[in-house]
Image (cartoon, rainbow, N blue to C red):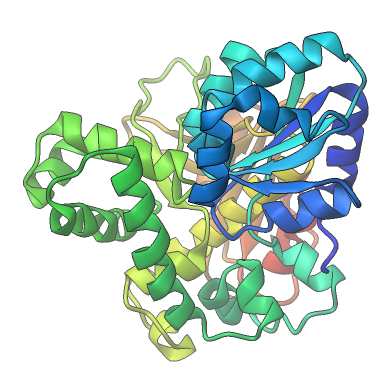
Length: 385
């Protein structure tokens, strides 16, 4: 098993709470992590219809088999489980009794907030980060390989062809889960919507434009975006609100959690195809931001990253809120940094003189800094905290 960076954070949560909820996309490694955390404890998978039926027929008798704790997988399938767990955990207040996993963020958060508030910790496990792969001494190769392969554990552990795996993932999981969560009558339209979202990766979201292109109303677009977000396919990066005394863009940008999936949706299957693709820069930006997102989740943090853009076109790709103040990050796919790449950061520092700025680019070696703006390469992403 490849060591997961979130492991220590999960161990701490089990000492703090009576239960730990681990959410994340399908096949991200939630079950493997849970079994490593809870060695020897029973494992129950509610994806199994037989197990679902046994629980639903007599929940109290079912749970008597797990008085000393268990791993309950895909708990969103049995939402009534949470009420019964609340009763159990109110009778027994010892820490670290249960691990609950789920691949739908909205359903799990809703049930936790209603029934297990104060009783359960909450972590998100995303696919492998570059740092996790590197620490495991896997052949991570160059940046193009990383963007094409993504981070899903099965691809790396079984040395699978990424695009073939992702095509199956799209059919098996995205479409099936969507049908279970929402009654979508025209799956072809939804599939078109998913591909269009891939073409908008790294761009400011225009729901009206998406609505016209897909052929559904904006309320449907909003609902479908929620489905993809709650299934950990993509996330919306919100704008950073500030006191720069400028009008700012208020719509979010969309990014995919995994660039291997993004490349598959864009029909990119080779390094040459990726290198020459018109969205190569946007995919590199998506990879960098998703890596930062993974690193934050592995530290038990889920928020605190934004982008900035005002009505004059001044833009910063990523703003990371820190105790010491916001960190501005500009991401460029160029292999060599150029002073023209510093325009946005210099504008930012003009109004935020005490904040730090980073230029992240695709090259191998970085100069130290220019005008108090530090340069780093994609391989140094883990240094951004």
